[in-house]
Each structure stands twice: as C-alpha cells, then as structure tokens.
Image 1 (spheres, one colour):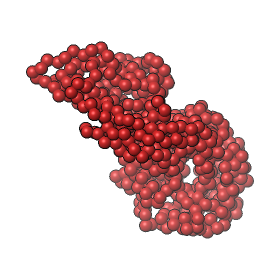
Image 2 (image 1 turned 90 degrees about the vertical axis):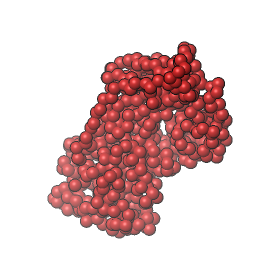
Image 3 (image 1 turned 120 degrees about the vertical axis):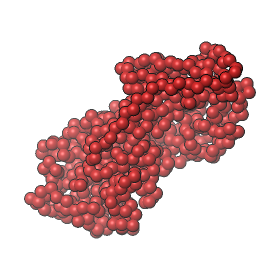
Length: 562
C-alpha cells in the first residue's frame, strides 16, 4: 500500500576464476576412473531435486529449457545467494574422476567442493563444462556442485556426469538409523507439511529424502519439509529415509497418510479475510474497538513493519516491535475477538526485503514478528523499485516466506503488489512465476487496483485486473477457475486515490459483491484511517476526500465472506 513517508540498492558483481586442485597423496599414483556416472538423478528426470540440495531453497526442477530428456535444474540466483545445488557421493581415495555438465545462464559454475571448478560467461543456449580432479589419499566422499552468480538471475543445468568408480571397500558402509515420529503438521489442497525425529549415523546424516510410495519427492536438510504440487482431495502416503555423506540410506520411517483438502473455496483451507489497513503512525488512528463495534469487522492489516537497521523489524522502522502503540492496538483488537495480519514493506521507507542480506536473514526477521504476536498470517506488500522491480529481491522475499511457512505450520502467507487495469504487469507476472518456480506455496496473491491511471470506471477496471490475475494464476499453477479465485485478493483505496480515481461506497460495495460471488480469499483497502467524510478534502491521511458515512467502507468490507 502507498503510505506517505527507497533507498538505492547496491549490486556487487565479482567474477571469480576457477580454482586449482590440490593433489592428494604425494607418493601413491592415482588410479584410473572407470567410465560410469555415479551421480544420482543426474538429469533431474525424476521430477524432483533429490538427492540434490540447493541453498536458500532456490532450486527447482523445470520442463523447459532442457538439454536432454524432459527435465532440467533451474536455480534462481539472487543478489545474496548464488543458488548452489549440490550432491555428495561416495568415491575411492587417490582416484581421478571426470566431471561434466550442460549449463545455461550468466556465470554458471560447476565444480567439486574444496577442489577444481570451471565456469562459463553467459551462453544463451546450453554449453558443456568439464574438468577432472583426483581424490586425496584418504578421501571417501566428494561434494559436486553447480551454481549461478550473485545478482545474475536464473541459470539452468542438465545432464551432469561424474565418471569414475563408486566408493566403498573400506569407506563408510554403515547406514543411518530410520527416522521416527513422522507426522503431518498441516495441509492444503496442494501441499502437505511434514515433520519427523532426527536419525543417527556413525559419521553424520546429511539429508532426508521424502517419499510417496516408491517415488522420491524432495530432499531436506532438516527434520521438516512441505511437499507441494499435490492434487486436491487426494490421499498420499509418505515415508522418510535418512542419507549420509557416503550415500548410505536408512530404512523407511513410519508411514503417514494424508488426504489433501478440496480445491476451490480458498484451496480447501477455509482462509477468508476481510482486513482493511490500520496504521498507527499516521492519519489520526481510530480506536480499533470503536470501529469493530460499529462495523462488525474482525481482522485488520497492520501497517507497516520496516527495518530499524541491521535487519531488525519495527513498526515504521522507528516504533518498538512490542510495548508501543501498535501492540496496544493489537491487544484491543484481540480482546474484542478480532485478529491482525502485519504488513511488511509498502511504498517507502527502509524495507526488510530490500535490506536483509539473505533470504534466511529475512526469514529470521519475519520470525521475530511471528513469535512476538503468535501470528496466523503475514502480508508482504512488495512495491517500488527496491523490491517489486528487483527480481532478486522478489526471490529473496518468496524464499523467506517459504521458510517461515515451513517453520510455522498453519501460517498463511500473502503477497500484495500493484497491477494494471488488465492484470499483473511484467514484474507482477515475474513475482507469480518465481513463486511457482520456488514452490513458495503462497496462499494469497493480492493486487492493488488503484493508482494505475485507469480512468473513472473503478469497478470495471478492478474486475478486469482481478480477472487478469486469475488467468495468470491458472496458467502458472495449472489451477481451475475456482482454485485460482481462492488464491486471489483485492486491496483497494477508499475514496480518492493519489491519481484522483474515485472509489465511492457504492462502487466498493459492487467490488465486495463481485468478490463474494467469485469466492476470492481476501478483501482489504487503504485505509481505516481514511474511512471518514471530507468532501472536497483531497487525498489526505484521515479522511477519504469524498462524502460518506463514518466507517462506511469498513462496514462494507465486513460483509465480505468469500
């Protein structure tokens, strides 16, 4: 949402040359590798990453562009994460191996951890990289990796080969114990969240592989994961196996069977939210209990959580996270039977998404707010050039949302962004595509249908923009109409917008009724502070600039049921 308060972002591109390999055993001569690819899932044809693992959850398997077969790896390198995807395999000591792979994108690297690497500049088509290395005298495992480069965007890799003899014969041959306590911690129409107890190993567990039947779905470094891309109203049986650095695999955990929710109606989650923005830093903020009593509204979107420095969240970047006016308002709302969804970001100010150094750091900042208030939902208001028009920051935000969603079962995640009169712009489309590529499992994509120079037909333009979003969600995620609507939100601006567009109470009621009839997930507007009459008052902080009843827009919004 716009609010009356970017700083320029710094990009650093350092191009590294390939490293020289330090040779192992100074006395024994290296053995000769046998021509056999010992990597698992080298062309990603299984449709999952396993047993590859990718930093920042920035890797995914795609069907285009590919070098061979029908799948390839896609890595979404950001300005703070090179999206390294790696696999550890058992090798023989003092042996020469040949590593090769096909890559596409800017500054893509292929190598072995602690040893040789090679890279290519920016091929527009797949290009082959290759190198050889010799294991040390006592080396029994090797970590093979591929990655992009910081701020260089998406890369692809396919048909990676490590030719040589597999390990064993004196190396680690003891498998980990089977994980225990597998359980589901949440579900939707398209995903199931799982957790389990850690396995033990004589050397150490490096990954957990999640299965449905005999199919490996994904690999996780920790003891929880969310399986996405599932079908609605479908029963799935999951097990988990532990794996160590030598490639030894445990027996299966206990099995758990979960039926996904039905499609449509909010993806089967029942998530419907009428939540107008309330801002404690501006515009004569009203007592929320007064508004709730007069209108029946239950939810408020609290604006805005920003960065107070060092990736530390605070209200407006200046008011304390707890103990101030914002917590007082939240306590009042909850004591009256309501709840809140904090909004991170906005149009101006020092934003966590832009300033936190990595997706994991951003996830940590979000978690502080989640923990402070025991939240059920969070909103990322992605705007302006520093976040919305920066694809690397988009990826950082989506990855952080994926992380906190996995770590907080049941948490709903919302992204809010601007739109044209016909649907998402280039950057809106890119945001949706990145959410799909990263399996971010976003619950609601909310557009802001105002300040688009759309003329006087605010109802028609809002509906057209929402239909454009619905069609983009359908084409990107493969959803039907009902499911796409159930992941859609609208966040308008009451009265006069910054561009003098007029959304009157009658028009807002039309938009509310359309939203109910199409069973969308969320209806909001900017802002309750402005939900007061001042005809001819212009675009100001504490009234709508038009003639209306006090809290009239909030009363209309409270009638949203989805």
